Image 1 (tube, helix red, strand yellow):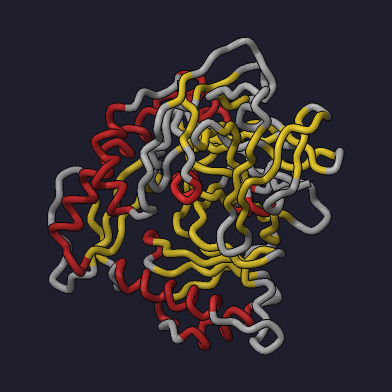
Image 2: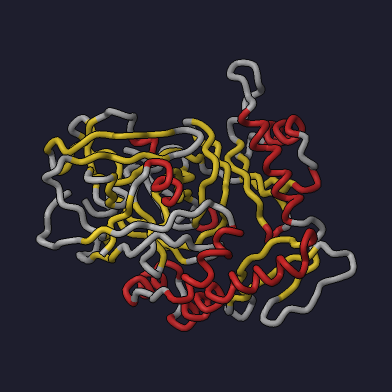
Length: 397
């Protein structure tokens, strides 16, 4: 990567399976000890339109959430209906737990318990049916699912939320029927954008393919003595070469897309790696680890096309039907993105690496989805599975 005169030390990143249970088991204690970057705090205020006090209150709710959720899971058992953070009418954030227990909700300090119809396990089973149905599709034989954009468990609405183009409702209903998922657990929501790859060393900078700007760098990594960086799988195929600043720099050592959207690029030995992510305003943030953030966490992404943008995690383990294939296990956010930002890094306010940009819902003919309000949706591939799969170590200070 491009040298700036700094030195770096490498340390191992914790690798954890993508499950909420894992997050509670390992990350609950770790997350409470993480420091909030003041500059990231300010960026979150700006992009989310919140005051400093509101960001502080949101972060406090998020810090308390893992322990509260673990207790709720134990108390409710099979009736646990999921947990989420929501904003009340007075502007404050609160932690909510759903309960499908017909005897009524229990009392838990600091938690708003809400009666729901379906348990989280029932919702997850319905989503799994949709996923299995899509994986079993046969090209040229199975009915098309174009326009059925994405689906994920949404505890707040106590449903599996299916995002559908306005003209594709019949296909969405057909997919649900073929899957065998209980229609009562599904909720269809019309969205106008189209999920598509945003293709066109410090995290967020550009790299080139065939002499032209392509995707964005994720995070600096090492595989043994080999230097490199993680990025999105749709950005290139294994063996394909890349350049930095107009000069040959390395090649895609491994790449997977669709299904997942994972890749890493091996760099020539003369490139220096930095545990940094650019804010495209003349500054950098450190990348200190990869503790996975939870639902509603403040996250920010960096890419060469639309710069540095912040938002909230709005869903996890999302299945997205993009223009180039179905991708499973993505994390959803309302931070905006555009073509060329793909592969760029996402971090949270604790300077923990979260993932690399995979897809964004962009209207036909547009270059990004910034400023589109409730339709401003993007997805990232979580970083820990990439590190685990390819035996990579995140570069940290």
